[in-house]
Length: 256
Image 1 (cartoon, rainbow, N blue to C red):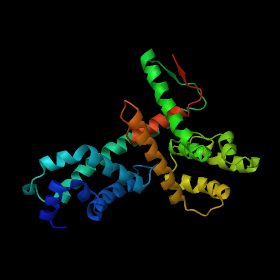
Image 2 (cartoon, one colour):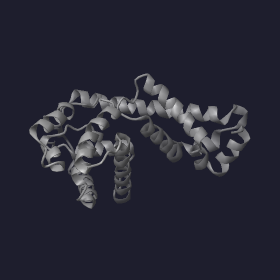
Image 3 (cartoon, rainbow, N blue to C red):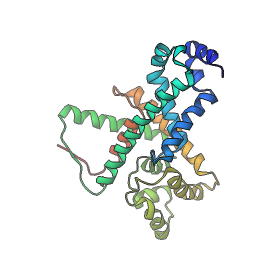
């Protein structure tokens, strides 16, 4: 794409510009470099690319429109510098989240947090909103809860498996728990989805790919994100939503 054409699109239709294959490829190229260097060990390239795109469109597009000048050089190169900085922010956030998982077992030790009564009420209210959202998926709720645990890297328990597959044998349960019954925060997304997809396909009688399963969950999480932002006074992005899901599954947390 010629620079003058891209610049005109930036001024008149920036969302369309960022979503063009050429600019999406620029994002993917940078994401892939970070993945190759060990960043984003938990997330797929597609998820990270989508997250970067969302941040550009929601938080940085006006900055880009206001500050880019053709005298600075090629727009795509200017854009890629912005994407690089956003990706660094996401890597740092991902690393912080991973360290938390490595240093604490949320399922085995009570989590004690000190909150004011107002904050306690706010947290409980947010968790109730998640409950109301899940109530909309009664038929698929066991599947959704199982995958939400995977997404948030929360330890899966035998009852989670039995809720989804009541006929699961002890051998089947132990095979699944060999991966998901302990801290699995450092495992790659593709590996985890391929493991859980075997169970999902067996119960549903399908032969769907693990990527199709990941997309199914991604759509449900998008629905949850929209639901929370619509019904809550708080603002949820991907990171905040993941934290909320982690909190939702903390069965023995204590607020004092």
